[in-house]
Length: 77
Image 1 (cartoon, rainbow, N blue to C red):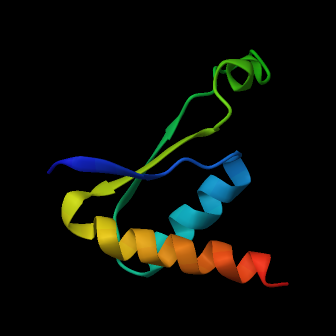
Image 2: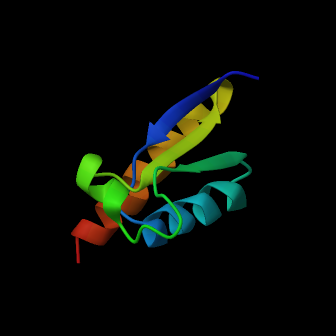
């Protein structure tokens, strides 16, 4: 199975929220954190994102649409 980065969240809370959303829709998700344990955010200085959300290539379009819908709903408030 080939994986593809579908989104790079700014923080862990958003990453976990999107992971739950995608898994509830039947999309398998892998979170890849850029953070370094015990170094309290030093990695954020090197990269502005918290990490990556990866999905299978065949689920990419579905995941992209779900994430876009989720993020646009947040902005409409």
